[in-house]
Image (cartoon, rainbow, N blue to C red; front, side):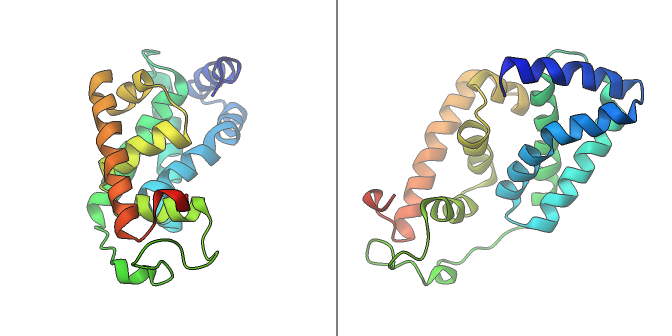
Amino acid sequence: MNKKNEDVLLPLLTACGAKDEAAFRRLYDETHQRIYYFAHRMLGDHEMAEDVVTETYIAIWKGAGSFKGRSKVLTWIFGIARNLSMNALKKKRFDYNLDDYHHLSTHGGLDGQSLDRREIVAKGLLKVSAKHREVLDLVFYQGFSYQEIGDILNVPENTVKTRVFYAKKALHETLCKMGVMHDDL
């Protein structure tokens, strides 16, 4: 999110802290899609992602008055969504089987045009660990800087860099196991 949009979010969050419902609706309108897509990519489930979005905005409504401003508003919101997503993952462990992806050949390449790049990567992301999935989402889908991701995850920036490196490696290995070659993407 650019600086201009971030400048809009702080006054909205401040107003939410004073229980301004109109400001809360606007904050929701400005941010909920990104939160939903993040949660959906983390969880791989529409209903669970919707639950995380709902819980995130309940937490925002309740906690807006305690926002200290140590991070950007969007970073704070993503931190809440991230924690709720991780809690949801702990409650429901995913077990993905490569046989579920029979439309991907096991001997290299895609089976025709059955999937586009986004679908292929989304399927691969569901197979890597939650830590890898979240860091890749925050970097590539959400566009956060390593410092902002460090704030969300509560880890140093260098740890984020290391996680991104290993997450990209894990995704590459997973895609190869799915029969997707680099040239297919």
